Length: 616
Ligand SMILES: Cc1ncc(C[n+]2csc(CCOP(=O)(O)OP(=O)(O)O)c2C)c(N)n1
Ligand SMILES: [Mg+2]
Image 1 (cartoon, protein in one colour):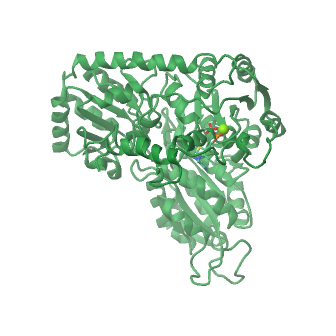
Image 2 (cartoon, protein in one colour):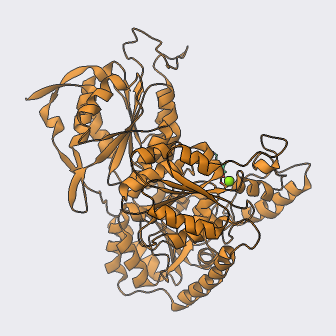
Image 3 (cartoon, protein in one colour):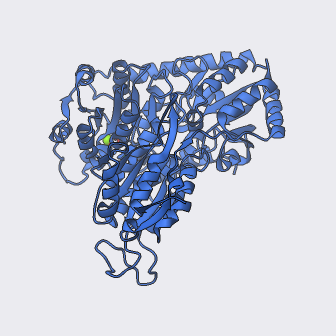
């Protein structure tokens, strides 16, 4: 047996370099790069190993560990999970800073290989700097917090454990069902220890998308259910993209006359202008989609987690109301809502249903209804994007200006938290499948700018527009430095409504007084907080930037931004009041009793009314 003596870190890095994938016919590394913030937990051994392969597997310095994971997630999402990145941190706070990013990746089922440093296995110098030391358990430390948010977790106590662990890690990262962040904790001492690794461990492996197929009887009964329907509707979830089933999905709905609604992760499955595209489904959806779903007799949900924002807290999508088929590769999703599960890769299921459905079509009346519902919705959209007069512009009007600036056949809009995931869902008019990049699984404030760097790495020829609220910008903006350093140009639009606008609206809808959300309502200061100069802030980190005070100025600024050769930030004051309608009911927890009448009224009128439409 031929062997080679390597440290754990060297062997790990060499193994990662040997993993390949095929993108557009070209064999490339499965791992496109490493995000690293070094400290004593990872610089001596892993730093040394990464330096040796820096031309093959580049290492990038992040500014915040959470931001690094968002960047890696953004890359994997935009690459449709075919390529991915690694994130490594030191021990202690470096590791715990990764956690929010890892949770975001976990919820979004995105592959990220996370390598936090870990404290010494041998414990000769325990406790070490940054160790979380417990009186009751010597084996537990901060890295155990990764367990519930990792798709696979390991912590090495000998270097040869890599030989069994790394193939399992890769199998999870490349599995369509199990996919999520993998955490491999590398204790400071063990990472530096050597072992005689078999040469064959480093043989090249090419990974492809795995396409498990459906049970044949189940496929036949699902086809029969569809043929029995008169007014079926389909949901396109993120799984349609990850399965690369966009073409098959389009052919399926076109051949059978099936109206489509998209989830936040699924948007782009059909071009915005496609006649069968009813828009977004559920809480951030369009009136057209919600209306056509309410009148449907079968829901075919493809590749969706069926979160409350998609299902309207199970009032729009609920098989208590109408039968439902879940086409999903994941067990967890296929059988949700006690629906009829067709457990399969989406592309394969749609291909295999075709010979069973043949020329069957849904009723034409259904399509006429869709056209009418879309016309009503277009009226709401036109109203929402109409120029504002003397008022501050709305998020909707800003979104429309971004639409006009963008090449809708090529460019990308990134959103994640605040008002923009709703406005983007309703109003972004992207015509291509990769144009809408919304992290609306965890809706993590701070994802946007960092995640957008990953999107730019995946789609270098597209302009990446990042729509970010002032709140989210304040929470995490430091990856602007990474975007400048790595020449990953972003166009960042900061919509400054002086606080947490969407939460203030929610608070108001719950019957409460404005409290602790908007700066102008006395957050932080009794009197008014001076305006925050976001443009100056971004400029201080190396971006080009400007503040604009109207939509016309925004349009002109975006033209300058497109011509710029580096990240360009445009800040615009917006109003915190307006939001585009059309969405469905959503369940939140409004107090059952309160001394405030407006609260109990909101409970009765909003909460209880919708509850009656839920199954239980
Ligand atoms: C990390 C994180 N903390 C808290 C929240 C809850 N939350 C959702 S939106 C929001 C306010 C966002 O403010 P801003 O970015 O200014 O957007 P706006 O609502 O004003 O459009 C908050 C606090 C969240 N989604 N993520
Ligand atoms: Mg805001």
